[in-house]
Length: 306
Ligand code: CP
Image (cartoon, rainbow, N blue to C red):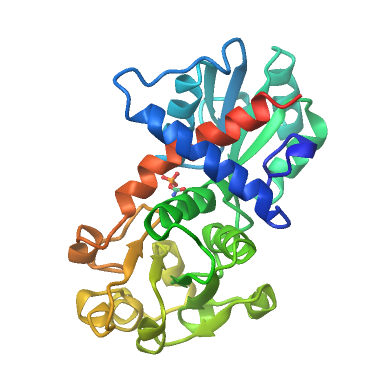
């Protein structure tokens, strides 16, 4: 984490030591989540504002739960119904909220760079909950936590991220984090959905699932963004499913079980078959549970740093 700058803006450039600290701290909060009373006091007296300018189910609920379980006071904001619709700028919105004496801001926005911008205009700690096509750092941290629980170490783990890499902040944060932790990362998808620069990030590119499946331990399946279908980046959902849909028939060709991950929301039987999503090698709901623990960890480390 960029603990020294008091913000979590992305995983690019974050050290192995900081990622390990977040994941180790998250494990102790995971234990708290198993208790009958799931609340601990470290952020008592701190006020956190969740600024969600884009839809979210998992990330938003997970941050809110994490904040309440650390005993913080929580205010949640959606752009619909706010004075943004009257023309107020993001900077004015943020500075007015900060004038109410808040300590931390969690922000999701459809534009890349908004958390970085906020970190320059407010004094509060800023946490990126997903910015445009740029990064979704807490998603990648919870993904790494889930894999570390299963495999003990990420060193040498072979992870393939499948689908719309071009429009995926989840893919970018996973690539940065997993590579730093020593995993071998590949991506697979239609050539139109793989950005040209991706090999420079140290990942291998596959255009056929059949080629990658025998050589990996984990498939992290991304949501196909249905709105992209009209843009001509892939011909039809049926064709996408045929070539890049992760199905039992395809993964059974591997000689070993493959762990199935998905950040959600899932388009069942499009990018991932329902039997795999609910099957014995799926860790999708573990990812969701770990999301609360990872967000508690990040909030705690930032909120209690001197
Ligand atoms: N994984 C994820 O970011 O899901 P939400 O969009 O529901 O928050």
